[in-house]
Length: 97
Image (tube, rainbow, N blue to C red; front, side, top):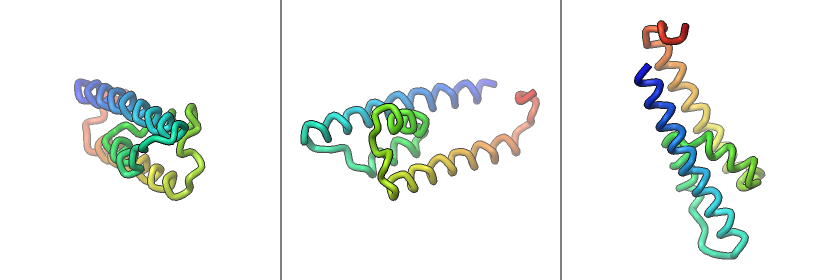
């Protein structure tokens, strides 16, 4: 249970940070300022901020129509889901009941 709590906190914190980075990039785009590199947005998502990235894409309408960007983003989500399934299958499943 402790691991689940820590993972939830980590995903939550990274999601907040990632959402904020998307918001900064969106503001920079509107104001013609220097942008956050797409590579950094992907790194934040890969580090666990993908839920925040997904919310930012929908709420801020940012990076929501770039096909190549979205393909890599969804690959990141798929990787996270695969790791989760693997970890759950390797663990004692008593905490799932």
